[in-house]
Structures are given as structure tokens and as C-alpha cells.
Length: 298
Image (cartoon, rainbow, N blue to C red):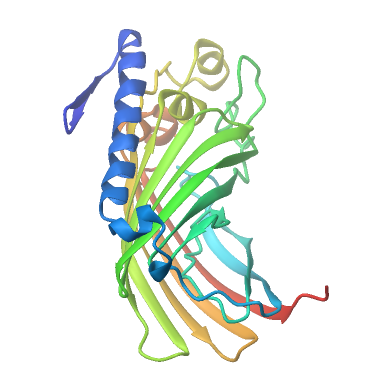
């Protein structure tokens, strides 16, 4: 198998692993540079005129939960219902940024009226990781499935106009799995009034060879226990798809929302026997949530 991305060509085979990872790094760097290149010079220069008005008001904390009907793991044919937390905070008077349910949990260290960036975290919970003899994903040389993986990294978000959000997250697995994953997204945003927010747009994700091996590779011992053929997963495009959100701010305290997300596992991920034999590349999830915003007691 062979696919090309820009000037990067990734071919199957062990000899191409380093080349695939190098290609992945160039793709991620290119995405980051493309995003940063669209940011006005005043942002880079730290022009105070670009900075949003900040408030010394009290800290507002938003807590809630989504009920999500989605795949039991990424690649699963089966779905079930589970919780998905809502957690955010801001000072009263500060700008309310759009947060999509599938975004990582972020904290902006740099922020203007159109741009923000900082650290981001994410978790992957494989809810039936041990359901098959092989399990869905395994760590190192053992037989333990990855039931929970934690990822940490950075994000950058830029709004070229008030109705368009672009975002890039790059995260490294620090617990559970191994490897680097990058997610690029863009959303058209419509706010007909102060109460309603609607957003929708495309998604594209990339994984390096370590990440792809963690979730989609099959080594000799895994093959022996599962009956799946051995498979060497390579770096490259992992999935493409789209997401949408409808949010209603009932009051200053209460918010309800509904959302849907679709991704198609492709490239080395979609070709994996874990997906092609035991699962499916077509991944859908839908969810509804409610949250409550309150003033911090301190």
C-alpha cells in the first residue's frame, strides 16, 4: 500500500517507519505554520490593541455532562451510551470562546480577540478493550489492553472572521498508549441571537508511527492470541470527517446542547485488520448535554 500527502510518500514495510514519522512531523509542522501564517502581525508582535478586554470579575465555573451514544472504542462496530463531562471556566466579562464537545480540555496562555493558544489535554477510554481475545489495543510486549490513554500537548485557535473558527491540537500520549496525534478542524459558526449557537465543519487527524502501532498494529504475539494477521501500522492520515453542534443558553446559568460527529478511519488505520476484520472504519457518535455555570466560592 502507498499513499501521498503533499511531497510525502509513505510506503508499507519496516524500512519506511522512520520516513513515515519524518513525513508526519513535516505535515504537523506545515499545519502549524499555515495556521500561524494567517494570524495578523499584531498578534505576533503583541500589539495590545488586538488583545480582548479582560475582566477582574469573579471566576465562573461551568460543570455538566453529555450523554453520548458512540462506538465502544474507535473502530468498533458496536455502540453504547456513556457520560462525557463538560468542564470550563472564565472570568465574568471575559470573551466566551466556542468549545466543541470533541475538543481537548485547554487553557489559553496567549489570547487576543481572534487568537488563543496554550496547553491541551485529552483522554481516550476504550470501554470494551478486553472484549475480544486480542483486545483492541495493547501496550509494549504484554497482553494488557489500553483501557485509558491520557494525552497532553498544545493547541492553537484562530478566527479569521467572527463566523469561522480554525483549530489545531497536537498531543503526545503520556499514559496508556504511545505516540503523537494531531487534529485539525474548522467550523462555520452561526449565532442568530445571544441564546443560540450553531457550528459545523470538517475534521482531519494524523498519527505518528508509535500512535498508529498502539491502536492499529498487530505484532506476532498479538496475532497468535487473536487470530489476526500481523500488521505494521505506519504514520500518516488517521481519519477525516465532520462535526456539528447546536447549543441553547437557556439562562446565564443553564445551557443545553446537542451534537454529532462522524469520522472515517483511513490510511494505515483503516487498513488494519483490527478495523477491517473486527471493526469498521465508519464511526458515528451523537450526544446531548446540560451544564450549569456558577460563581466560584473563593
